[in-house]
Every structure is written in C-alpha cells, then in structure tokens.
Length: 452
Image 1: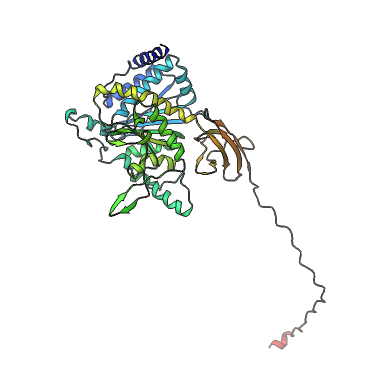
Image 2: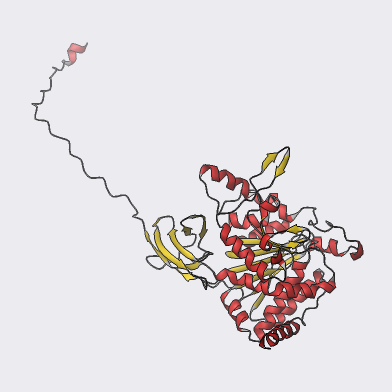
C-alpha cells in the first residue's frame, strides 16, 4: 500500500510541476519567452545571459540556477547541459525547458533535494546551441521529415565536427610523453570555427566547468569519451575501435548513472542497436573527429558525456510529456554526480589562493587545475588515492586521500615557495704547491736610442 502511495505522490508531483511550460515544440521566440518566464518566477535563484549569437543573429541563451546567481562561490562546482547542437535533434531542447521549470517550481515548493542541489551547485542550461538549424527543421512538414534537414548551422556546418581537433595532438603527445589535458589551442583557432562553436569555447574558458552533458537524438544511449579512435586502415576502410580515456572507469560510471535512472535506456536494445547497460564508448560506436565531448576533456577541467535520448530526432508533441517523465530523474541524478571525488583549495604559505595549480592523481594520467579562486574539483570513484598538488615556483605537496561513495572529500593544499636563488657555491681554494717557484727571468730593457 505504501509503495502505491509513494508512486502516486511522484505522479502528482510531476503533474503539478509540469503545468507551467506546455509540452509543445518551442520555436526560437517561444523558447526565449519560456526562459524569461522561469526567470520571472524564480528571480532570486536564476540569471539569464547570452554567450553569443548564431550565424543568423539569434542569441544563444543560458539560464543559470544558483543561490547566488552570477557569482562563482569558491568550492561550489559549475555544471552545464547543452542541447540542440544539431538543429533537427530537438528533444534535449524541450527537456531543458522542462528541467528549468522543474528546478524553479520545486525550489519554490521547498523540495529539500532541489534546494540542496541549487545551493551547492551552479547549474547552466543552454537549451539550443543551434537555433538557426532548429528553425529549418521545424519548418518541415512533420509528416515528411527528412533525417538531416536542419542538422547543420546556417553555414551548412555540423557543429559537432567543428571544434579544434585536439585528439591529433593528444595522440602525438602519447608517443612523445606529452600531456592529454589542457592542450593549448592554436593562435588562429577562432578563424577555423563557426560563431556558435566560438561562443561555446569562450563560454568554457569563462567558467570552470567540472561536469557536463550534451543532449542529442537518433538513438537511446549514454556515450562517453573518447569519440575519436586510433583509426586503423583495414581493406581500404576505416575501422573504429574502443578508445578509453585515463578516466574510463569514471566515465562508465557517469554514463550508467544516467542510463539506470532513465526510463528504459539501460535495457540496452533500442533503435536497432544494442548497448550493454545502455552505454558505449564513443569511438567503439563510430569514430568522430572535432567533437565537443573530447574537446571538453582535452582542453578544460570538464568531464562531458553525450546523451542520445530518442530514436526520433524530432519526436511528435504528444510524446514530449512521456519523454520528460522518462528523463526527469536521470537529469537530476546526473547533476548530483558533480559532488563525487575530492575538492579543496590550493594556497601559499600566506593563504594567497593559487590559480592554475595542477592536481595530479597517481595512476590516472589526466590532471585538473585550480580555478581563478584557487579551488579545484577532481571527480573520482571511491577508493584510496595519492594526490599531488603543484604550481610553478612552489614545492609540490602529496597527500593520501580516501574517497567515499557520498559527498566529495575535502582536501586542501598549502604550497611552500621554492628558494628564489640557488645557494652560493662553496669557495674553492687552490692547493698550494710546495715546490720552489721559478724566478722570473728579467730581460733588460733597451735604451731609447738603441731602437733607432
């Protein structure tokens, strides 16, 4: 009896919170209005801002949730969801609008889980990275949808093949002992990418994102890095192989959190493909170059997975409510994963916070760095770890850390400066010889008139 009451309570809760934003497809103007409506309903925990414009001038709006919107609180991690990167893959766009409404309404109704999430996490929602492509896809006759119409941006570019290709540099570094983290961009990178891609990269540089997901459609699976494989030529064809990151076990766990909280993703069989546990390494599915998922991992502190959420790229409106019910818990549970692992502050002996300090975990060849406030966040599975903090001009510090299954372990570092100058070399004394020194031979100087 209690179980049925609990299920009924959850259903009633969903009915209550689903009333503000209708389950319809939102064009650009409707999407913007929906975001402003949520902001108006929860002005003290939200901020609406634009990270740039599309090719056709549409704003790329982000809705932020925080107890102090617009401010990075040290030790509070930054999270992001990005949807509608492919203009014709629209479910994620609608799910993020529903998620925004859900967070606002549940906060107003004093849901302790949502209050804690918003107080301890800074959440950024980008419902549409490709609003131009969406408008093209939405203009089709919905009875005769073409599979790729509206996928690209207004310049005809696939935005998930448009990021700087850091995988090539990473694979080269593997051979030469170079890093696979915080790989720098070429000086001319802005001229090589689309306006939407440039806006997202600048966004990543402006916030120290720790965890992220990119919402797509066309399958039902949680996809984790690497997306680009070490490609091998076989009989004239390219064959994709599983290409794990140094954090492969962690990424598997993150993908499973979403898959198992989803209505039916974890069942594995969907849309003609089979995925064990509803997850896949991106490269083992198919190899993808210049994708956003790998770019996050190789250039920033952010761990991102890609969520394929529906077999239909542009599902009919009558399925939107069902899809929201199937994804709601998974969307929340995945955000909560940002609080796993370790976090802390790195400072010097005078308690000055050190930005850009490096946090290394022995046995995992992928480092993260502190943000501008000196705080860091390192996602880790439960276990025992040897963690090293280092910074230019400072002596590294090593600690042993036990990571549990609950909230992140707090580990602060205080680094001592290295000596500014090398100590002076000890004086050396020439050994005195006991041999009698030879007398200098004196040559008589000629008189001036003798030189004529």
